[in-house]
Every structure is written in C-alpha cells, then in structure tokens.
Image (cartoon, rainbow, N blue to C red; front, side, top):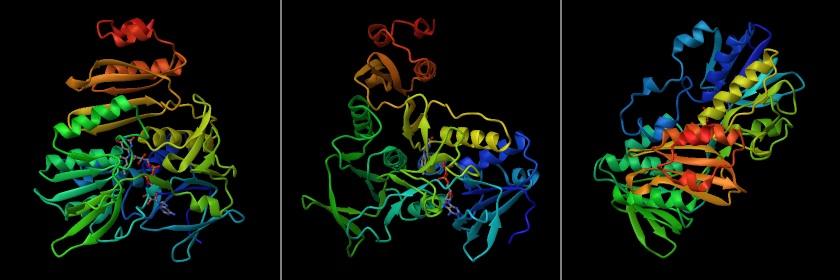
Length: 409
Ligand SMILES: Cc1cc2nc3c(=O)[nH]c(=O)nc-3n(C[C@H](O)[C@H](O)[C@H](O)COP(=O)(O)OP(=O)(O)OC[C@H]3O[C@@H](n4cnc5c(N)ncnc54)[C@H](O)[C@@H]3O)c2cc1C
C-alpha cells in the first residue's frame, strides 16, 4: 500500500481535467493528499495544439504543459506518472496498479479521456498507419513525412481536417478520405460542411467523399491504399481520425453504470458517491438540452473538474454549462456554441466567400446553436442567447446591416 497521507483524492489520468481538478481542489480548501496517476510518461499537457501549432512546429513540447512542474510541487501532489491503473476495488477503496501496487483513496476522480477508434481493415497495423492522440503520436508522424511526402488522412472530422490544414502548409501532399457524403457530417450542417470542403480545395487538399478504403499494403517503395473502387493510392504516412472511444472500462469493471462514457450526476458523481468522472470519459445529463451527452472538449473538462472539486470540498455546484468548441484551420477560427442536433432552420449571416460568417441553428424558432467562423461577436452573443432560449427574428439575424446589439435588449 502506498504511504500517501489520508484522506486522499486520487485522480486517474494525467489529463487536462486532472490539472484543473488539482488547482480547484486546493482553491476550494482541500487540505488532504492528492495523488495523480497517469499512464503517459509526463505531466498533463494541452492536446488541441497537437493537430495545430505543435503539428506545424510552431510550439515546442515544453510549452504544451498545462501547469509547470512547480505547480504540482507547490500543491503537494504525489505524482505517479507512467503508471497504469488496472482495477478499482470499491470494497476496500483502493486501486490496483500495473506491477501489483495498491493505492488507497477516499475520493476517486476518473479523468481517463478517450482513445482513438481503430480502422478495421486489412493492413491497418502497418507501421505507417497512425492515430493522433498524444504528443508521441505527432512526433512519430512527423518522422515519417517531409515536404513533398504524401499523407493520407482517413476521416474528415475536426482532427483530420486540422491536420490536413497543418500538413499542407508544410508542403506535404494531402489527400483526405471520408466515408460520408460531406466533411464534419457528425458535428455541423451541410452549409458549413460545404464551406470547409471549398476551403480545403482552395488550399490544395484533395478531399474524397463517399470514399471507402478496402485495405493498406506495403509496396517496394512505400505504402498504398486500395479503395473499394480498386483505385491505388500511394502514400508515405496515413493518419486515421474516425472518432474516439471513451476509456470507461475501469469504471465498468468496477460495476459503475456506463453508456457511451461513465454516467455521472449533476455533481459529476458516478453511482458510487466517492467516485467522480470528468472530461471526455464522462457522460452527463445536460440541463439545457435535457438529454445525456458525452462531450470531447477542453471547456467541458475544465468546468467538470471545478464541479467535482467543489463537491469534494463540500460546496454543491451543479454542472450547467453550455457546451462550446473551437477548431482552427488555415486562417479560419470556428467557434461553436451549443449543440445543433434537432435543428429545423439555419440562418446564415455574413459571406462564406470572405471566410467570415455565422450559421445560427434554430429549433421551432428557438436558437439552440451557432457555428461562428471568424465571427467572435456572433459567438459571444449566441452563448448568451442560447442559454436564454431566445427566439430571434430570423430576417434581422441574417441581415449583416442589423447590429447584433438589437438582440441584446
Ligand atoms: C489532436 C487533438 C486536437 C484537439 N483539439 C481540440 C480543440 O481544438 N478544442 C477542444 O476543446 N478540444 C480539442 N481536443 C479534445 C481535448 O484535447 C480534450 O477534450 C481534453 O484534453 C480533455 O480531455 P480529458 O481531460 O478528459 O482527458 P485526456 O486529455 O484525454 O487525458 C486522459 C489521460 O488518461 C490516461 N489514462 C487512461 N486510462 C488510464 C488508466 N487506466 N491509468 C492511467 N492513466 C490512464 C490517458 O492515457 C490520458 O493521458 C483535441 C484532442 C486531440 C487529440
């Protein structure tokens, strides 16, 4: 058994959510021990730059850290990095680690995130087929590419498209294969998908829609993909970005309720009151949309960490935040507020050709989400209006000559 002072909060996963939970625990007055156990070798770091500035070499690895090493020392955090938790033993309030060690907890926070979904086709285990989740993944990919190399990206979601934008700027020849009939199909409207398809085409990326891959093969010179139509696509490296799977097995094996993530209540507690789940691995009932959702975003990880820490410190704050996201591709910053599922009307404002416009999503006249492209004012306004369940005048919303201030009154 480890010798950390009791009572102790143990956090599993050296994640974004974990770093925030530590800061919030101390801020809200937690005087007991804090232990952070993570299976990656280093301290928690920012993942969003992995497909953006870090991929392009604009940011060095040290700058990715969410908090410097001194933060963990100052807050008296027991760090167990490069260690994997194998089991939660709820009868003894202990964790079993790789190597057999036991760690005791009074409160346990699961911040285990997600892992990349694997592509189930022949040849997907070849060394040039990559996934992008960690800093090591990016370093490995970069070692397989140089200017003029051919990069094959499978999946036109946020990560696939962000990497396409980053790679093409490095002089790499990029081809994107997407099984659906439009890019970003899971997360946005056809109007915004069309914008991104045109944007990438203008920037020199070859996007193939309705495209199915049959297998990967190693050739005498490199690698090739074979499409369902029999086309041969040579490449030097491939990146598969077809979604993620929540790391909820630890919770499931311990008998905690899971369904697309670890089910939590408004305080981020699982059905064991001493065990919390925060960030990408957790699935909560969203008050605003009145349904269960699992979010993959930094704002959600940060906000849920604060809620868990508050509950542990005896302050009952319910998680009630509006989901929001961002994506950077070329000179376009997309900021999304809310969730668009169930919309029945799209109102656009601005000019897509100028790379500055917003798509507002309404359901029975009520604003439920916005995609704001290089339009920070529209994003900020919508964050407020969505929470107020506002019904805007669609004609005024679409008219760029009508000031946004009209909607604030
Ligand atoms: C390339 C990329 C780009 C992204 N871009 C954006 C963006 O632009 N905007 C945005 O909001 N979000 C973005 N995200 C998502 C964002 O990074 C996550 O939502 C955020 O990091 C929160 O994750 P988390 O804290 O839940 O866990 P994670 O950061 O995923 O960390 C979980 C950690 O737990 C570890 N772990 C799992 N199981 C165990 C175990 N049993 N024992 C020990 N350790 C374990 C994992 O190895 C991992 O280190 C991006 C993600 C990636 C990969």
